[in-house]
Length: 426
Image (cartoon, rainbow, N blue to C red; front, side):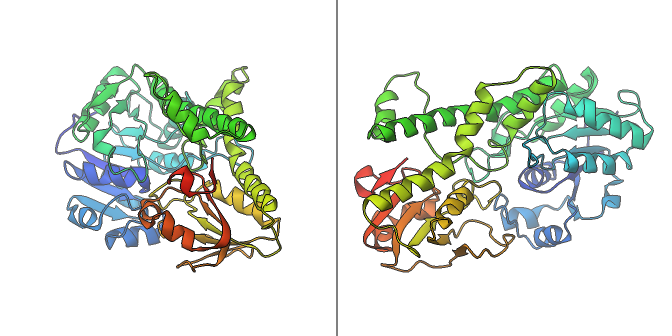
């Protein structure tokens, strides 16, 4: 294994939220080959277009040491490989490692003596050494810690967050032996302004990553349950939380929909491994159940309020503002807003979705709801503000109110506006 130097050539496998940011930053210090199987994605990036909206056109076009390709053969010149592909769950909510293992097989076929392979994809503790390294060894006919080396440095990208960027968040690092751990740590220290934190093993780094989002998931589940209880008691959840957080050690979490490809997915990686070793986790899975049901709860609450005001009729028009899984982010993967839509359409309500931020190009047209590019005034029986995009905040409640009919309801899921200005919130 060579030292970190100008001769270090880095191959980034997967150019999504994680890989593209890495490729841009590493290309400021090293020669980088960015690989993505999608020819369209590579074409867009070469033209300075990033649909994730994480990297600007100027940053893409200014990266002189970055070569973008959809041919894995172009990765052969590299001596360090960083794998950043998605790790979703399947329909049974079990880890789906297909993309991770496909990327691993690709690199296995390119691996040379002295090379280092680093994984950033979120996995359960043990996955790198139990699933990935054996594949690398088998395909390359090389031996770990003798012929090639492996590291794990979990991604900490927060999509849509312009404050906590890649270089401003401490990076966890680890390696298959001490020498590799030092190499990985030094490599990332070249680009991470916030510094690095070297763990004692790959398994520790894997575990630390998977509990980050699990902890957040559980905290949101708790306040979601608070919200359900307080709504039943006809109490204002937001007012109660504001009162409680006057105590110095009260954690500041708010109710809402939990979707996306991290918080709503990562806990299942930990529970899968836990069940493998004989322990059935109760708290984590309970939190997942609460959060997975919130879209249904929201829809039923709206229906109840519409019935109460005698607004519920066939073909009532509902405006859903936002379909992305989180604010200021184009990603719609695992968005729980779709759960709301499914319940409302069973009541024969006509759903229109407005989200100028979300990337809806890959969604097939649905007969039960419609994407719109502009919003009509005095047109809707109810309005759900589902995502806290800045563009919705700037609209202001007066303009949003004008979209509804005279007796329309506004349901502000994210408490963007004052409670006195909307009909109800979570």
